[in-house]
Image (cartoon, rainbow, N blue to C red):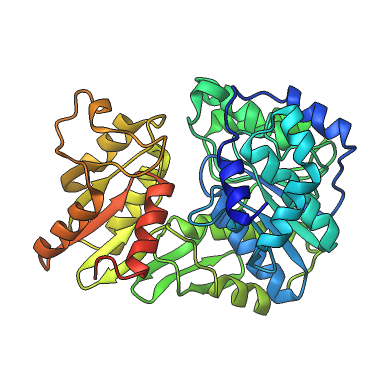
Length: 410
């Protein structure tokens, strides 16, 4: 198979209602196991950011680090990295070929296949530590097949209710499924209802329960984000412009502290690793004149964080371009953006899950079929006292960021 054959094959694989029976049968049949040191990261929002900070800090310290993240923004290979470099086409092809007949036999999904490829790659490369991001939930997730050195749950809010449940307690139970016996769990910033569920699971599994402190002295401008955490003062993130990232970075600092006996990182390398960290499609400033911000917020909790970050960054009037997946809480997100934005413009993009015009049943906001034309029109009309904010989906945000890089708009 060529890499294009592999990509076509992978993207055709999400064809069944998700459960673990076929996947678990596959793992048993091929005698699959993963036993490298690892950090497992779940949560509603912030997983990718916490993972990125951890990867760069450990790389600066000299560890061989593998990472598995989702979703991909451009190429499938981005989901699996070694030393920050995506897996090669040849390596990815080799893992698909290795398991191809069994993949077909057990009808594995795209995410299951990529999980197996990632963990196989990290085993073969003998990584010092793997940073593994949960795809959805935790308890039933395809990544939940190994014993971790630390479980991190970044945040807990309502999401994927058709799979994880309709209450915070139900969703927290799924998130807490990554907690392992006598293995520490670090819970980020969440509400008491969800925290109590995680505490109870931790008690049942005799897992030490830990929480990060709050960052302080958080400031942001065009030179980046500055914050302090406990005794580490004035941490500068020159590539990051969202105040919400101070909390994600703080979770990562606390995780490094918890594992310092096994994987020590000195403060100098932590600062260097954090300073080179850039989070794709998270409060990405694609233009300063005019000011244009692209962010992959895709649920109400993320939307509220984005609103607060925009207010902290600029007092300009906000013109919003919004495109979402159809299975998201779009009404909840738009209600939040209505508090911030002078104009809200709906659109869609090329993706099978993208919400279309006819699916915005009662929306009072105008809809535009072609998002590229909409962005170009807004750029020609934007005033000095305005900012253009583009959001609604991480997949949409990723497309737009790449198009700005390629010179599509400016």
